[in-house]
Length: 178
Image 1: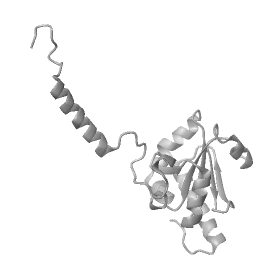
Image 2: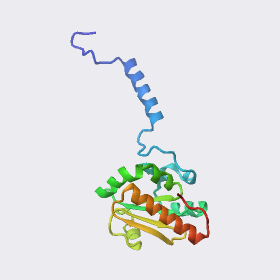
Image 3: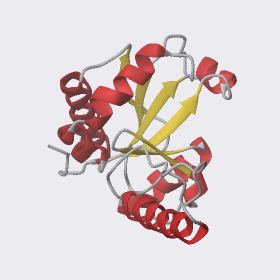
Image 4: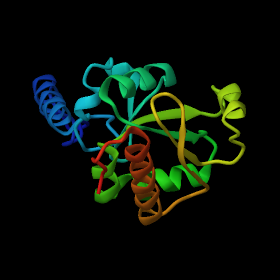
């Protein structure tokens, strides 16, 4: 080593080995994935670019595709109306969307993300003016339940159960999420 060279300078082969190790670690851990759960079975047919994780929940980014999946799977929809600038939305994502009970209940829904800045007309049509808003709908658009404002995990789970029970009642199904 030259006198002017730092002991922290790595040779090209050492840098490549370090890069390969880091790449392997990221492949195992999932670089850039915000949630840690696998994509639910109901969303496996959706193109990966159309699904985004927030906490442990997986959201379809297109309402049209989300409702098609819901109709095909016979599941109600959870519409999360949010905005990038919404502090309460991000707080809810960090807390409630990482809760195990909420994650388990979400498997009984097709979750759809509605960005208020990209879909202002949809927000107006659904009467959404405050964020976050979670609206539960049947695949044919019937309102099942609605939550406005930041919700705790317990409040969100209670809303999900209420929507599931209403959907079961509307469809004559005996199955609801617990």
